[in-house]
Amino acid sequence: MRVTAKGQVTIPQHIREALGLLPDSEVEFELERDGVTLRKARHASRRGQRLVQRMRGKATVRMSTDEILTLTRG
Image (cartoon, rainbow, N blue to C red; front, side, top):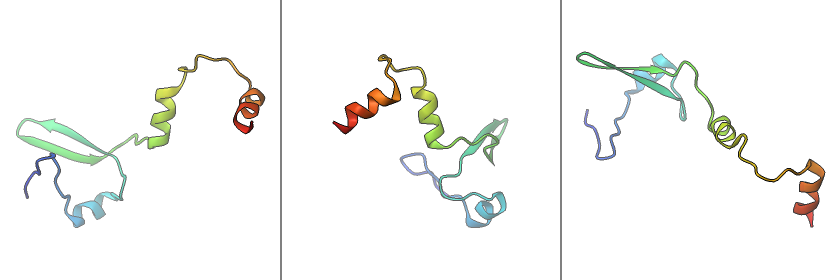
């Protein structure tokens, strides 16, 4: 198995099935003395949750939901 120029490798199907890895699954790598361990992420967060976390508290304008809806609906 080779690492691509982008640092990617293909996880063999039997390993993906054994770990229950589906597309968009999150994994963790743990560096060990002579190698690395790959495991399904224990606390996988969804992309949407990460985006909301990153944006939380960033708003600079205090508006009510009704005011925002009025602006967006014209």
